[in-house]
Image 1 (cartoon, rainbow, N blue to C red):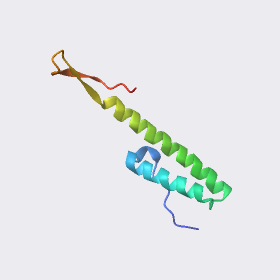
Image 2 (image 1 turned 90 degrees about the vertical axis):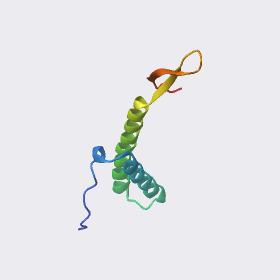
Image 3 (image 1 turned 135 degrees about the horizontal axis):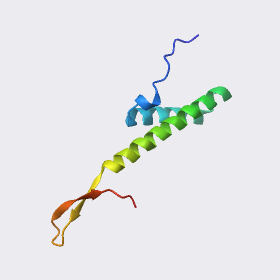
Amino acid sequence: MDNVPPPTPVDALSFEDALKELERIVSRLESGDATLDEAISLYERGDQLRQRCADRLDAAQARIEAIRLDADGRPAGTRPFTAG
């Protein structure tokens, strides 16, 4: 039996670490080298990582503020960022 440590819980990963692991999983799945059971496990982990990254991006977007300008073009305050 391999002495492979269990994966880090998804909630404990930074955005960058989750993205790197997700990229490794995608590469492994694309290689076709994984057995069916491994591929299913990798896909499940990948989905959790994808959601973690999406959540972190949503949180970052919510924290961004856009600068409001007055009629003369001078900064007059901030407002929450809205995409689109």
